[in-house]
Image (cartoon, rainbow, N blue to C red; front, side, top):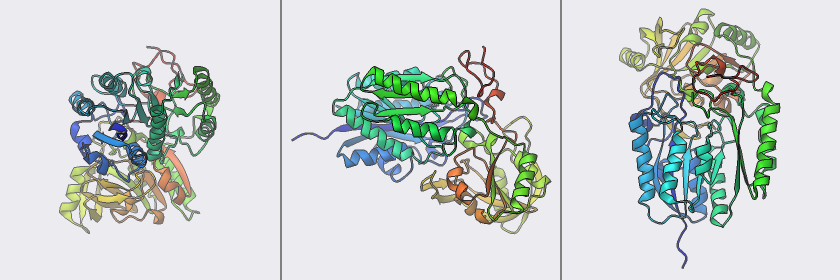
Length: 501
């Protein structure tokens, strides 16, 4: 009787904005920041089931194939500045130790982001992959799923047998990417071996224009899917996360082919297409005042909300979700039926709960991240609704995740309502308004602290979508960041200036 195929699985996800105000400690991974909380051993399987994340799809495909899973640890935290050294070593040590203690293995799967920077490591994923490889040896296949925003490094490519990246932004295909990783691992277990080709591209792509629902990404990913087949079973384009001050920051292409020539040809085809599209990776960014005025003009004749992305305070890119620039503009222009979320301010939420629904509170709201040009917003608000901040986010991005924003409130000033929470998570689901009594479809203007992920749930209800740049830690224009460590010659934006140390 043949023994079951034994596969160790684990995950450690963090998108690091090295310019952000707050670092990630162990407690941030324990909480999850909108994702399942840190889990160890068999608890990994249940904690990540039926959620739109890579490991969920991998486990579903593995179970369908009858593989025996050896779970180690899985965790994720909201994007922020560097992962603290002791946190990285504790989590990485548990994953590597679990794999080492698992006994004979036929393969390993890791659910990673691809843009993790720790206090002591530029390449968090490359180091973790290398440590796992030292434990399992060169013969055991190791497959990794990555975020579309991965800053792929040579060490990651060298250590893994395959890197398989998301193809949608908003990331509605995270679980499907895990399934694709499992299918590729099955090819490797059946004796397949594939040549690798890796290309790093010479310009940074602003995250607002990495949206895969419009050009140029829509066409690039369609071409990528068409190139995949028997000769090149796995092909990935990662536009990168343009807020990590490391030499390997930026977009990349990774291909796996039956032969080196086939892998190289596929990688070159996608790289050429990206390069030909450089000028198209740009778009209109409005100031807060411009954005609110335009939104009000559109809303005057609209039946659906105008949605504004408060892109520079996106907690999905390292923001603390507490800047007040868009709130100031809404109030200054007396925007009608407007709602903004989420401003993370535990003290303000506590004050609202202490006062009670129907009361008024005078607060200095938000603005405590130390972002240049930002400050707390001092005003008197009506407390319209209170919540414990625990709810399900059923939209296509969070995919049914259980959210915990901590004590939360709906505060109103004039005709502007603000979702105030105690824990940060990117506003990418309509439920994040509804849990404090705001019905998003009934608003004229919605301001979301997000860059692109909100589009998955809000585009169907939006009259128009605008992108605004209020002061925040994630510039819409990556050339505005104070870079010091990029590789020489990398253009800081599409057709922008080249970095020189």
